[in-house]
Length: 193
Image 1 (spheres, helix red, strand yellow):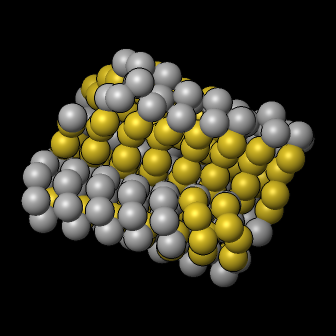
Image 2 (tube, rainbow, N blue to C red):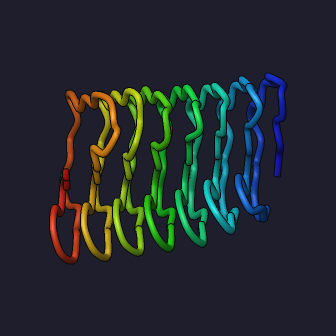
């Protein structure tokens, strides 16, 4: 795929497909990178650890108007992963039918990072344990707005959203539609602990 290290490219209007990496199968941003990732099709990528579609570590990507489809992670974040002091803007994306073996079929929000997620469709994603659409843990600030979260599945808890508030800052979910999600145990739509 594409690796951004200490740089801020425009990644626009590409097909990013069938790539494999430990982190960021499709696109990886690290070391204070600030890429704008827009109007791409990001599909059929694989990550051994996290972020099969896109991943950010210690970076500030703007992920806008992409189609992120059927990416697979062997651990976390089938679609998009972020952590380690990232500041992520995720706007207007379709995040569809991604899969993670452990947490976060669609998006993982983690580890001292800020996330602004808006105007997205997050549907048909699956996690092997927690957070079919999204898994949120140890973040600084998370805002999810004007987003449809539908028909996602978690094999244990949190078919739609899974929040764990250990060492986490505030989270806000507003003007969202959350429907048709399934958790085999607890919290089909939203699970919070």
